[in-house]
Image 1 (cartoon, helix red, strand yellow):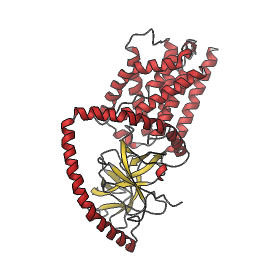
Image 2 (spheres, helix red, strand yellow):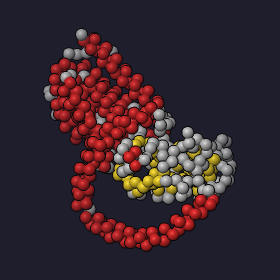
Image 3 (cartoon, helix red, strand yellow):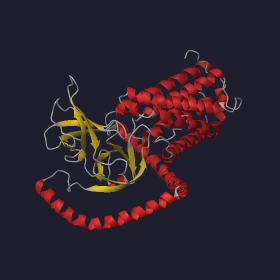
Image 4 (cartoon, chains in turn brown, blue):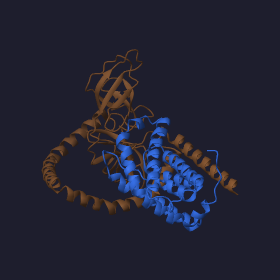
Length: 276
Length: 179
């Protein structure tokens, strides 16, 4: 009996390991497919419970946090009031300018600018895992958000939707190691792929021919090539340094993200999906 | 294990996942948050043996994988291994939480959680997640260790309550000797 139990235990272990490894292999390098479906189902089941606990525990946490930091909270409030009043004023000016920009964009056929519908969402969680750069937002499939949609904000590309359920979505930031974005340097035809390295680290631009002229500060945009995961023309970042290693087959280019990824209170999800 | 016991264990694991995602995620020290998910397969393995340990690990890991933008299945894989080896340890050593010194369960919790986190990082790298090498493990390991040490006993009681009647069945040793 003991050996039968041992065999059963080892068989169960082997099967579970095999299933896990298969799931990992299927999930690598793609944000869609079977594992995405499984993840969405699981997330849809679990998220309501997480949301309820979040709703209950966050105010308690905020209360203690506020009580412990009362002085700084008061001064921060005063600063925020001043910022809001300045922004009210700016908003009136912006409305007029936005109208003009939309007209110009329509005339010049500038890709996504002003033409792609978007949803503004609030960031409700940062870095759910210690091992991934991500944020969670308070809008989900109920608002029309789907896996794969690009997210912009705070001056440039923020990332891509990777998990979605009815009321929330998780965004993988461009700095995450799994993030890969097709890019074009400035107004040139030099195209490459921008990869994330880790949180708070510069992005890496790959596949640019050695000794190409890439001035520091040049803006890098999404290239929007056929099959690309992002529409063309979204600013990703600025070139921080570019050099060609000795005997290198490509340039070594660091890009600083255009978006301030440490201050993502609100983001815009572009209701855009890659053409099939 | 009875149907009621399975349901209770599922609820306890679900509670663990929810606490991990909603409360512990916001408890940041040096930019890192505690990871308690490894404690559930550890306790299940120690209480009920390697089979239930690995099943609990797989379930808990998969549930967490659904909510995190990391490779799907990786937490399940590592937690399965943690649960299985915890069960194996208990089966071969005759460990019982009730009769051992008070510090043994927290100690095992620290070892399992730190090992789980490091193995997770290593396997992630093996599977091509280069950014896993850029994690500040010097900050992460102490945070994980302290949380595991503090929470191991509460988790032990929860899992023990959930499993209940299965405790006695583990006492029949599996006789695994060749690991």
